[in-house]
Length: 295
Length: 305
Image 1 (cartoon, rainbow over the protein chains, first blue to last red):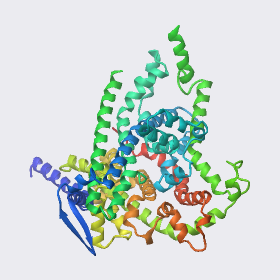
Image 2: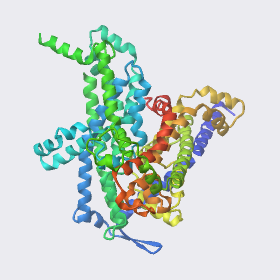
Image 3: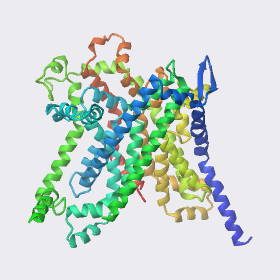
Image 4: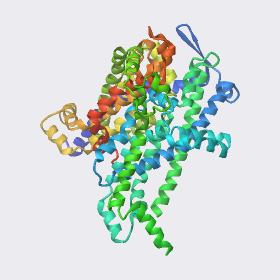
């Protein structure tokens, strides 16, 4: 056997072994992801009725989608989606900036670093939908000063009603919003630790202060992590169980006047909105990346 | 002159180097402590309220320090949650899926890291897709499918997808293992090959033992995420299989169901006590394994490239 043939045989074998290792995942993907995804799209174009043990699927084209934009349950869903988009607009920058600030502070040579890190990561462990729900509804999620200074009233007076509502929500839930930054803080710390210390020393010799070093050395090396962290944050918020938009999807499943078909259709609209948000965020950060590199 | 003042202000806030100089250090520790305290404020409030009796609750002077430690709130929530039985259910639908998901995703990550597989780019794209597509989209057909398979309202509805690597955030775990296995030196596998081991033996004898940190980190994250998950479990698990989180979600109605306890007794102290009982198991795990959570992300090299 020539060497070439042996190589060919080896790569063929490697491919087969690799697929054998992947087989369980691939099977799972087809069964629990690809098939349900396609079926869901088909449902969204159908009238799905439950009959005893069975289920009846009748194709009705875009009727469900038309209903979303014209009926009451569809309207309240659309409202919650636009609320969600606004929420993303406010929360993602807050969470990202907070995570970067904390990561930079925790990356300094400080005592008790492990202790501080453990504190800032703690919320990730406990922040489930019901727990956050309890904290928010009992008013434990806000910084005490916010209420005492009458900030919420001030916001309600200054902004128009549509804008005041999300801003007021942010202040009254500020702490638990910051709770969503645990994983991101760790991501940024990991990225910061990759920066060579000598880069900072070289910068200092050239007369750069902490401010300049931060913008010219630290930020450029964080830029790809910013994108990862923003995407993580968006997905995390989008699938959080207290999110009103996804609550609609579940509630409409068993509602008498809507059902599985209508529910699937609003789920797809939600997905499209989410995809758009992700694309816009990536584009914006792409521009931001260039801006930082130019500095 | 103006530039000088600007510099002074900058140096006041940031120092020459943040961690140097007395003021810099004081500011740094001060900020970390204050923000950390505010960060934990909801937890502190939850704890102090959970041991307040009715008198303390309505007394406006008693805010942070209760006049006495009142544990009846815990007793009541314990009964309402049917704690030990519910804890058993919670552990079942948390530990088993977490273990299975860790195993499957590690095998998939290993395949992508070690073998030249055809269509690898497509596989990566599909993995990314499973992360980006919210589960709400394909949840309804899954519900119908599980119904037809007869596993709806049973633990299998949670366990099966986890086994097939389609559990919670499976994509993240595949990437963790991919990065980790990629960092393992190839020489080790080759030496195994020379000794006549087949790829599966190499995986179990060389790959897995060397990847213990990645396994531990992935398992812990998987455990915590399953513990905190309620959207899918509320849909797929029946009322007989309510987890602790689901009981907290429906706490008022659970309160009605509990025998010998009247609805009028429900107050925020009891709610907080129940919340503490629910975060307690993960909190204990976190206190013991804290290092593996916070260092895991570095150690597994998720952030590499």
